[in-house]
Length: 450
Image (cartoon, rainbow, N blue to C red):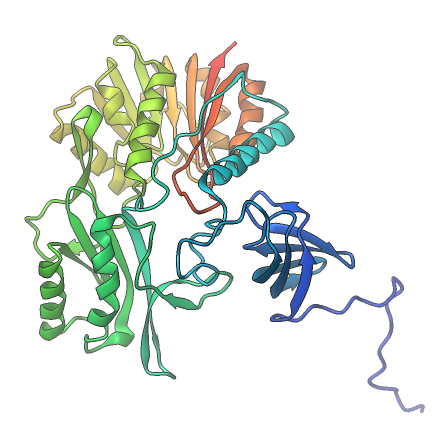
């Protein structure tokens, strides 16, 4: 009996497989253009490189972060030939922190990039262009972020507590002592937070920290083990020094240490106060949020005798201002706790022409009781995966006007295809610069029935 031959390697019929590029390898590249996410695109030896921190026309040295087939992800390590558009990064942590990926672009160029991204998605996916483009809604490019989540992790090997933001392209934590995009009231808390946390007795039991600045300032600590009396005293003293509320998140929902303290934010143009709890969704840019609500009301043009539907209503960010202008607002949200809080917000603001319902909005709209009377107009503000199942039934509700607020141009474009099929026209669209220094695009679109 012949002895079997072991260990032979057979070459696939398609030829030899190209060697994979190792992580960490440095490569000199010429950047051809920008991708929709703000990264530079280069082509070399049959591969497409996506390079964070690079601009069109530049020659750079890039470090490989990962490679998959013929796609290589990298970050800029050195710029040999800079674009005339490049500006010095305003943040000392640029290139390491993963938060602000396009801060090397002037703000007006960031807006132009986001505008191109929205226009390209609508044209390529939906084959449409709005009848009119709206000017970008924007505010200050720094000092705008009123909510932030701080990563906290115990490094058992180094016996060190890491506090900061996630690094670009990895799960590493970059120590941050200053963040230019945070609102001013949170800056001193951010700078002193690491030293305070390092004083706690069980650093390995700490999770993330969330900061919020609204009608009050709050510090929430996620912890996986009970806190000692001494640790609680350290936390309370820290918050008292910064005139901030202390919230703790152990088992169950986040809770304030002092239950009598109120937390929320104002919609000043409408004299509204909305209660908020850490963990609730809230727009992080207060100025752009107010401008967004005002523009949505202007485009929707609600009339005093109308019944309006607000889908994905959250805490009532749109529903409450709408209620001041119409006969009735029906507001629907998928998260039951948010429905309760939105209804409480309406009551506390003395708005009694609102009704709130919980429904799974990832599913088709059924013959729900709240939908039977129909609506003159609809406003929807879905999450990143859009609202495809919802928009499939919108024409059946009788709405003549529809404002769609989107945090993902790709799903807005996909849903636009369905709305056009139902007979709606894309009348107006524009970007919302909710996150300056990032390539993240939010948008608003107005549809009208033909």
